Amino acid sequence: MKSLVALALAGAVAFTPAAFAADPPKAADSKANPQQERMKACNEKAKGKSGDDRSKFMSACLSGEEPAKMTHQEKMGYCNKQAAGKSGDDRKKFMSSCLSGDAPAANMTQQEKMGYCNKQATGKSGDDRKKFMSSCLSG
Image (cartoon, rainbow, N blue to C red; front, top):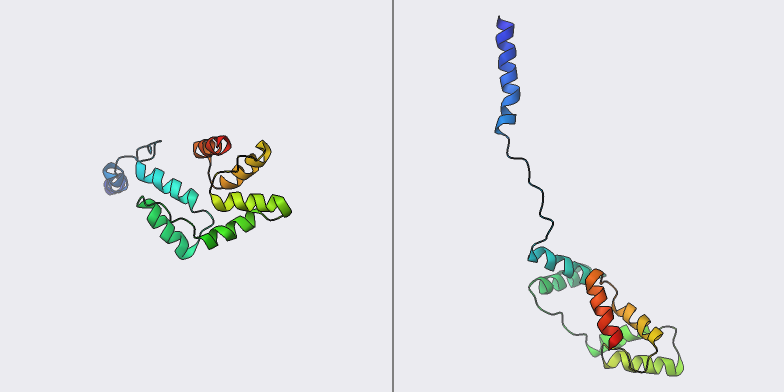
């Protein structure tokens, strides 16, 4: 009899926590909230940055501030990297176009525009990339 009571008591103790357990976790929403969307977009834009640069960029991006424009010196460095392998008139034309703004030169061939826009679209994906490429190639 004692063993039957002990067995019942052990069973009650073993199954009691299951009775008080929290509801099973609900499936996560397939849609992300606006903050999650912003975080995802900012992470995409921050690729290649690290340390203080990344934290400053992420802080500004998540608060909705636009990143600061490049200084002329930064832009010159960026354009020089992009112009690697070009020489003579091709390099001059490219540098002029690059330093003057973001849009490709109107006198570029479709193939040159495609290469230029692909370089500019680095880090973008999905619909963002499609929209950017469409506007870049038409401009």
